[in-house]
Image 1 (cartoon, rainbow, N blue to C red):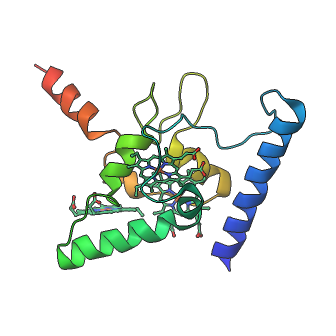
Image 2: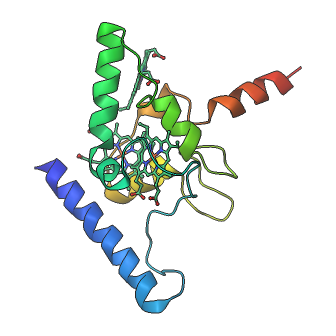
Length: 137
Ligand code: HEC
Ligand code: HEC
Ligand code: HEC
């Protein structure tokens, strides 16, 4: 029930945001989940599928890894972060200097779904984390 409501709300809000942009031809004044353009041409699955099902991929992936020791690269959380981290913030949760929200955290705040994954998992891309670690004396 909660799931259906949250999804319906997300769809409505996204549609409303898009309608305002189309109608006005200018930046929407209503708050909407703003995020940088992800890296790469496309997502690991098509965008519409991801919008609805990314949570199932991740939770399924986590269960398989933790319980059975199976790892596949395409649906790994680190892989999502590599593409979806903001260009300026290099993070999927941090808010940018212009006030834009992180890709994961921004939409989640918007739809009111808690996202506690990044208490343990890195919210920054692996390349950036490695580079930063190498820069340290
Ligand atoms: C376009 C909006 C949007 C974006 C972007 C987004 N999410 Fe979500 N996320 C949702 C919605 C809506 C739900 C569904 C809530 C439900 O089913 O109750 C959800 C659910 C989840 C869940 C399941 C949470 C739970 O308690 O059941 C996880 C895990 C998750 N998202 C991870 C992520 C990660 C990681 C990212 C960034 C790589 C991300 N999401 C980006 C909208 C988004
Ligand atoms: C309490 C710490 C903790 C939290 C919170 C946590 N994880 Fe994990 N997660 C782990 C550990 C430990 C592993 C196994 C070690 C590894 O694979 O890096 C793991 C593995 C994974 C994997 C498989 C490896 C990968 O990178 O793909 C996925 C996917 C994953 N977690 C997703 C999530 C998602 C989604 C959330 C939030 C709903 C979450 N985790 C929250 C600790 C945590
Ligand atoms: C190779 C780069 C890449 C990887 C890896 C990747 N994505 Fe994406 N993702 C994209 C692109 C590009 C889009 C399409 C944006 C568009 O159509 O406007 C997208 C779209 C999405 C959307 C829909 C966003 C919206 O505005 O509705 C979600 C949610 C999402 N990705 C989550 C994830 C999750 C979760 C993972 C890891 C399992 C992941 N992505 C892995 C590049 C990637």
